Length: 320
Length: 269
Image (cartoon, rainbow over all chains, first blue to last red; front, side, top):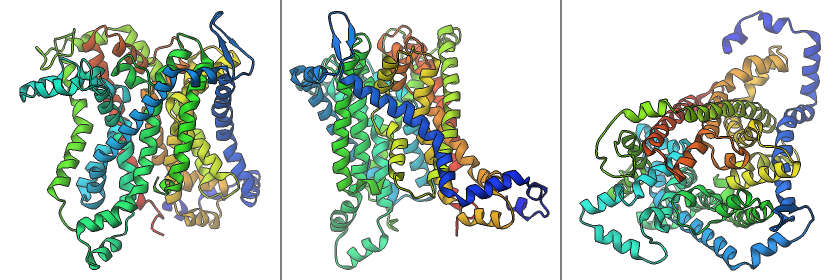
């Protein structure tokens, strides 16, 4: 490109027709207009397709569903929200989903932090590139295939059971499965299995923000801490960890939000107890009750809005 | 915050285990594509065979689903590339009231859970009384693909030195020529990378698609239905291996295309 400019006289540049040049100068002088023209198509698309859809969602959530005729009643009412908030089963579903989202967030932070720390502090050159690729690759590769892999792993006759048996630890697996709440007849229908899959799927979303936050910790700060007599553990606790925390919060936004809205994993790995996403899917699908599905999907939006407000106070957005 | 010291053993071990956790499960899919057992997920496989590749090849429903996915992916990517680049070009330098809101609007489709995007589109289709079609799938996919292209283009715009554009203008090029001869060549690899990631994202998308597809079957939807009600498990494994291979290529290419872009021309101002 520097060649293109160096070649003189450049016919492409010299023979500029007057009209385009005048138009170009006009746009250059009116930068605001240019910005507007550039923004118009994406804004129209997102405004009409996306905001329009969100608005329709909000409207639908205020409609009600006539279970008798199977028709949606196009009159504004709070019936769907009433059904959502007064039913014990529905509240259980919301609580269950939030608990899982929290557990997954904590699990991903615990597994992800060492990886991010190693990448930011110790890895360099090829090792670092390799680590980065190893974290990025699962992020983009097929979600469904990755869930499917765990179906193979967790199945009763599958790999994990085989591994436990080979290690003569079948009793341990049975003990785990016998534990109330997290256990079940097999790993592939237990909350523990679901937790493992969720954590596996969303882990890269946790690692990358933590790594970004750690990369930004100035080395002079760590040296200063050491000069002032802090042992490495104290430096880690009092200097590195507080500075990395916004990264953890940023990562938790993803893990939390993605777990809240997922319905595929509970559908494939879970038991018959519903999560928020499943209710939304089932209600809009076979039941045709779009108003209740819409009202249900407002729940994760509200939860995420509260979460984002809290995250903003903790400085997570600077770490994104 | 690079440290000169060597990593403690515990940290290395934790990193290694974490990365294995991220990667080992995929390896088993590959193994299971060759198993002779088609009734369960028995491990170790009782025997190995190549026959499922032939069975999968002969299945018309798989080809139909694949073809639909490819068409949706290509068109959604094209739309996303145009819209994402325009948005990045407008937003990378401009400072105006409401800029943050627009940025948020672009990011929102992937920041909110996929199910919200899905049910929102479904609610809108229902409200507008529109039937499901090829284009309803494309609309959904393009919406969340915009941000991928936008992010890639924005990062490149920021790294392209403004002085390059000024130099081009000083040398007599008008805005369009500057775009054609200076901006676009700088942007090309970032756009290609963004486009490929967008395609990978669309090719693999299942949550939004289930809400906008109706009775149509894209490859991920085909796979989902096989996961819920397995018919020929090894055939699903073969398709899974194929999907891994197909998505791996654009991801790796995108990685190599955008790698080391901090050394882009004029970047070291």
